[in-house]
Amino acid sequence: MRAMVLQRSAEVTTSPLTLQEVTLPIPRPGEVRVQVRCCGVCHTDLHIVEGDLALPKRPVVPGHQIVGIVDAVGRDVRVIKEGDRVGIPWLYSADGTCDYCRHGFENLCDNAQFTGYHVDGGYAEHAVVREDFAHPIPKTFSDENAAPLLCAGVIGYRSYRLSGAHADSRLGLYGFGASAHLVLQLARHEGCEAYVFTRSQAHRDLAKKLGAVWVGAAEDVPPQPLDASIVFAPAGSLIPHALRALRKGGILVLAGVTMSPIPQMDYSLLIKSARFAPSPTVHARMCATFSNWRRKLRSEQKSRSLILSRPIRPCRR
Image (cartoon, rainbow, N blue to C red; front, side, top):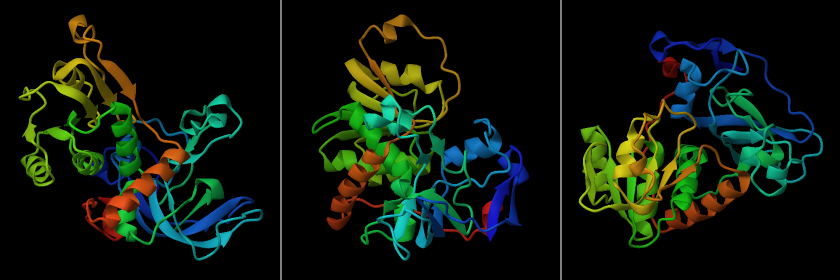
């Protein structure tokens, strides 16, 4: 099968991914093989390719927003069958025995593995995954619209829930990419006011189109103190700005899987009782909960993913 393979980390401008013929994987007991129909490109893939995250496996096939059709099942697979359409997210597996797993937080498992990082991912024609970490995709979604939900969607959904935002809350979003544009739609649906901090004029225009009540740069002061904020951009320099914009007792959620160093801050920014809530990964139960919510909004035509499709070969650059 064909796959985009990363042999070593390098600047993405040097085209470190190479198109290769690799061995077709065979599902082991409890696993299913998925014929990949599409795979979303995530900012975490960029961190992996460029070495911001040290590679535990080389070579590796990146990609963790995978949608495809099951074309082979291993022994002991009980529910999923050939022909089913499923998604494979960032969380690939967990040991299932530790305290975190037994309490439904397998994303914190010390032995967790992640798709396209510890194991080969979806920049390929096929991928394998354990049955219990393959998620059925509702017919409501096209392949292309479902793929971003498997990382950008669930990370944004978990971050939003951790923020404590609710009707009439003022919610700040720092960075406005795949995850934030979905959270904005959720926040508006639930009656929040959304304040978007981003450098790009195109992103500011999109945020306003999707219902943001205010847009500006990270250094700008919003017209009202914010009840909660989510930092999606992997820039530690944003944290002091985000804290200054919060009301007393506000919540700041850090959504990135990695982040540049956070600068030294005046303690007065923290003594306001701002609460930090890191949110780098999600567990299987959260994927299912988000899927049910997203399907409801999709049926009501109140939420959509903005996508740009490309065939596998041009993705080298």
